[in-house]
Length: 115
Length: 113
Image 1 (cartoon, each protein chain N blue to C red):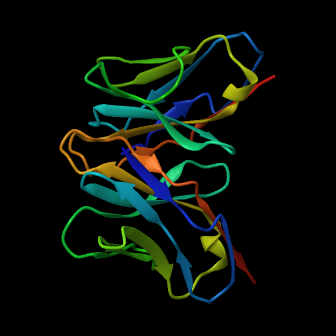
Image 2: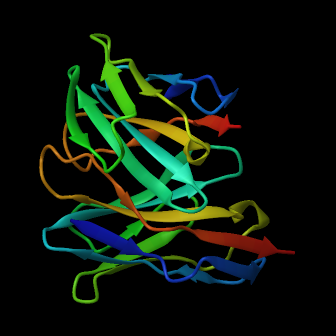
């Protein structure tokens, strides 16, 4: 079984400031890691994912996350946030095996970007 | 390609009633899974279907059930509704291999009164 901990439930930050949303996971097996974003009254959109290879993964809108196996972490960062980044962000894991498509989610971090 | 489509988007039901939610996956995706999202419990996995067979099931009572049709469309049913079943129900679809992106629909908002 896996579990995901998102250490901050709310993160307020001023526009153009950097931000880090923290995610730690626990698993007895190898996992894939994901960050999803949810805007108000919408479903989840994949932001980025780590499957294997380079531990630093990037999204098209400036977010990046680094997989740290020793610290079992997958923190999400952005060097300069915009008002439009205000949303809830979910970290998730799935077992790294061929038939596994079940996601275990963290409790979410509400990012609020202030003008 | 059209995304994952869920219907209805919003519905209100009375305690004791039952409800059926529908999901059309992305064309070509044969795996469909369902999640419940509530403020208290967060996002929880309900079940996953592949080729009309339930492959995995989360820790929910038997009142929650689902099925998948030959065209990969899926339905989930909740019987004998309770107030605590009020939630956003999210459907997701993906291709076969683990690690393939799991795409979510916009969800069905269920309110039980």
